[in-house]
Length: 276
Image 1 (tube, rainbow, N blue to C red):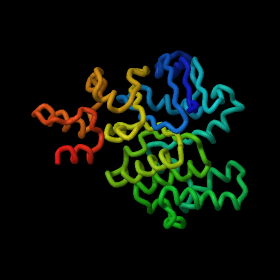
Image 2: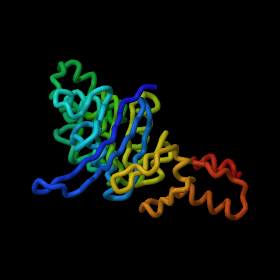
Image 3: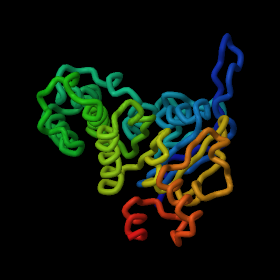
Image 4: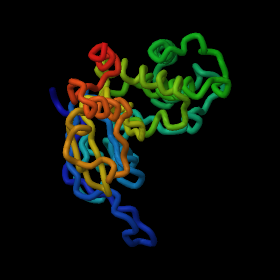
């Protein structure tokens, strides 16, 4: 499996009045393979969002290199193609909705790419089907629920057929039902269509389906491994301002009471089956 994203000794500084005001990323290296699902976690200020913006050249590193599918983000002639291959979805879907109907909103990015109108229509139909919004095609976006708006934002990105989705806290403003709708959409795209996913989240339960979890603290990567390695490892996540998923906390309580339960249970149904 080849790499789609690669960061090599990347640092990023924010400047104020020409002087370094904050080092947001400090000499980090990370490789992500095509088709992987990566969960990126860390407390506020750890550098997660800065890293996300480096992945589709919204920002370019102060030092080091960021490669996207063989393209170097610091080269200006590569940036349009990089942004086509890596789609960004942000926390507030209202910030990405620009049109008066659902179908027009999905078509907006395609029109900017100069796609033929007949192809735009096909892509809009496909994108709305993939996120489960076909029946809302002619609705006004402001009438949608929070979860539906976020799925609309995702549809607008996937209509451009990116190879990678970078999602920066996409469920932070949603209720539990909306969160589930968005997560199901993301996971389906990853598993069934092979889209690479980088998912930034504060909800630890959302990380359990990832292939790998990358933990950040003060601009550095401090952990990089499978969910069971991260949550059962030696690093104290509480010291990093992070919680343990409720399922794993329950598992630990049951084990402390003497129940013979594997420590690496990450699925509620698996735990229920063992208890039964």
